[in-house]
Image (cartoon, rainbow, N blue to C red; front, side):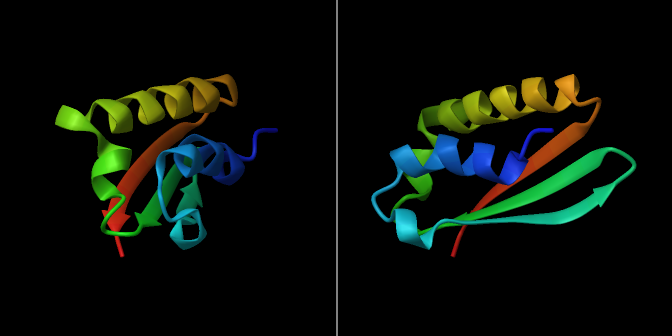
Length: 81
């Protein structure tokens, strides 16, 4: 079974300047649907989202692929603290 919280952290931590301020929480887990909330330092928000949202889209693509192997759906929100 995949630990999605650790997967999200492993994708986001190399991108940020303040890794100790990254918080990943699972807000709900019902019927195979997972909702994750990621909070980063406001200075790191642009690094995680990327130009035109390209980095965030790539992170979500990796998560969608991992979740589909588990027969689940995943939703990821990225916000600043």
